[in-house]
Length: 319
Image 1 (cartoon, rainbow, N blue to C red):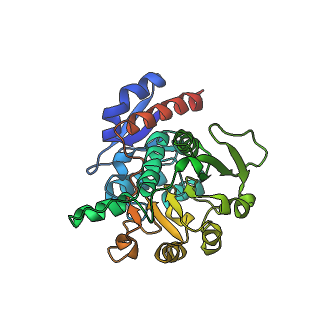
Image 2 (cartoon, rainbow, N blue to C red):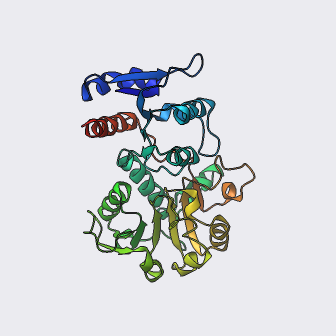
Image 3 (cartoon, one colour):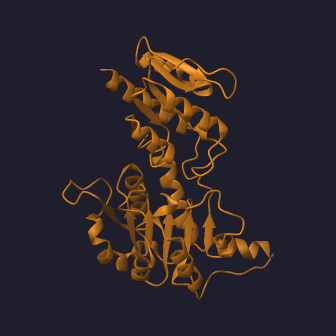
């Protein structure tokens, strides 16, 4: 079995791949120079090193070179990527060619969930206000008006109950929050760590209970612009929002209005509809917003977890 992957991935994971499927032949692709012969290659492995330095809207030359090779390879039937989501345009182009594209669901669950909870805690404990006072060299205790809430009395409504959502729910419960999940399957058994779950149709009924709205869902036709002005208006005054899913899940104009008016107390935003976020975006300067450059999944162990998922999947697919 011939497997297309980057030269970096071949150096890091080649031995593991050969051990997973005896006889497997990883075919490395360098950032420049001659391209390998692709006839007979059945599987491609897209690792983060190919994507590094780019965004979903501005692909690196290295990533585009690899994608173009996949799209012209005559025998590729399956592509494994490093991300949990597979909604990017290149992956849709592969599917249009009949190639099966699979994500690495679960590989980034721990760091993404930790980032989401870190953002929630930073907003809850008023750290933007504390850090702004630090920049001004002013001693301003946060007692009195706008004092931090007691999380043990609050509800976290988590949209998305996959591995990331489940880990967010586990951590939220550890801080005393009551985690409710929103998911597609209304009748499936409840996923771990949620106090309750409900289908997307129940979202209008649950938003008024949400002190925190946490987005951890894929970008689909169901979730695109799911959080619009009407949804934000249903949240209690002073609620907070955390988005570690995709920028397209939130209608950004409505979010800006809710943050500027103070209806939302704050937001932690790791993703945006346009990335990199343009320098002129008003999100940069909002005092109640913490921005993260789509880095929630960053972590030293991510590449190894993705490689383990790839090898497990490769064994099953080969069988």
